[in-house]
Structure formats: structure tokens, C-alpha cells
Image (cartoon, rainbow, N blue to C red; front, side, top):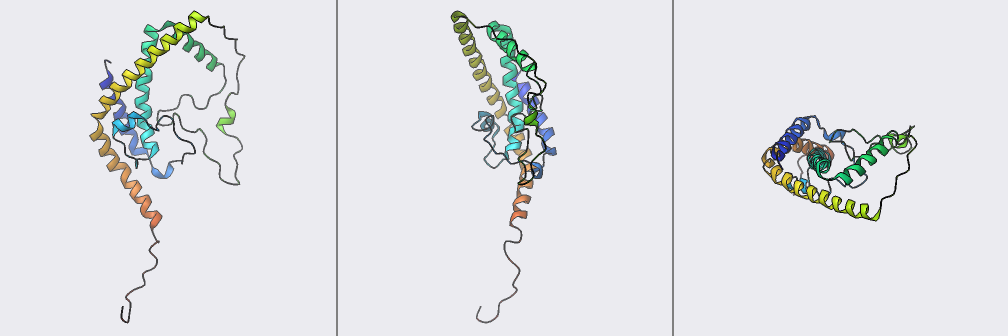
Length: 217
């Protein structure tokens, strides 16, 4: 786990530099549950409460998740030759799968819908999702694995999963140390935007000022 503390610190630093650019008015509502963020131990380690907007959480969770993924990739390349070969084959198939709009996005956008919801009565001429797969090349049939190879591959996958779990635990423990910085940034940059939005939503709900009442009241 060498370097985990430094990688987590760097990810938090990048998130802190990104956060001032986030504006609540530009946040798109989600139509599906985010599999990366829902129930994520990273969100708990960061100290995110339920009122922190999803986009704010997603940007940090994505960067921290990348640390775990990179560590697993490094471990796999060094120690798990069968799994590494399968991953390289999958990457080759993806390269021939044509245009993939969700590939190569910054961490704050990874895992999000690539297209917004269309306005009623105003459909899009085209969407990025519809373009997925354009330019795809012919795929070479995959050679079947023997039973022995399948068993060995399952064992390497188990080792890869264990690496992900142990790295994830180390990452979360390191992230806890940065809770004060995260909380301060949310309080300073996010909460005022939420309060302003709520104020605008309820402005005028109190009705006009009726002035002083006469008579018994």
C-alpha cells in the first residue's frame, strides 16, 4: 500500500481545486441511481452527509475510486498473468467496438449519463448514446478456455478482488484524515448555494404584506 496516503491527498487536492467551479444551477437531475456513489464507503469516509449534492460527492468518489482501480491494475500486471491477458483482450475488443462516448471522461463525469433528459416536446436530433458503436470493426472470435484455465482464472480474479478490498480499506482510512478539509470546503462553497436556491424557491410563499390589522386584532 505504498503511496496510498499521498495518492489520496493528491485526489483531495484536485477535488478542492475543482469544487469552486461547480455551480448548483448547472447540476443535472439524475434519472437513475448512481452505482458508483450509492452506498459507497468512500462517501462515508469523506464525511459526506445526505444533503451534499450528488455531483459534489461523485467528483471526489470518482477520483478516489481511480486510486483503487490503478492499484488493482498494477497488482494484476505484476502477479496475475491469466487475468492480465483477459483484460488485454477485452481492451482490444473495446478498441474495435467503435465510438464510446463515456470513455476518457474526467473523474467528475465518469459514470454519469452522457446525455441529458430531453425537454417534453423537444427531442434531440441525435444523442451521444445513439452514436455509441459507430465505426466498429470486425471482432475476432474469442478462443475458448479449458476447464483448468477457467479454474486458474477464477482464482486470479479472487486475488484481484482481495487486492481491491484491501486497497479500498486503506484508501478509506487515509481519506478520513482529510474530513476537516472536505467539510470546510462544502460549508464554504456548497452550502451557501443550497441555501440561496432554497431561499429562491420559497420567496413569495409568505404572501403580500397585509400591514397592521384594525379592530380587536
